[in-house]
Image (tube, rainbow, N blue to C red; front, side):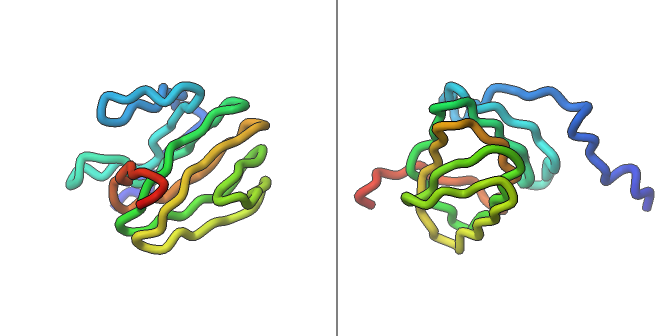
Length: 119
């Protein structure tokens, strides 16, 4: 095993528009840190939200971890600031919004599912 095969130099990667299932989320950019070839999806990412951007209400079938690297965001009426960590347990539901802009590290074992807020 060569450890260099498992290192991602995130500063050398470009921010890409966040597009999922053909939906372009305006004001949100992504960098993939760990792409799992077996599931054909990124499981560890950086997300950059511009001021006023938001990601819709969704469920996490296998949970999620968020670490705020810069700025702040709102999840369920709670403000997460730089350095704050949120663990969302399996089947947890929420949306994410920011009035200031932010950069987040996310670990997402399974694809999220968009749902209505009353679900």
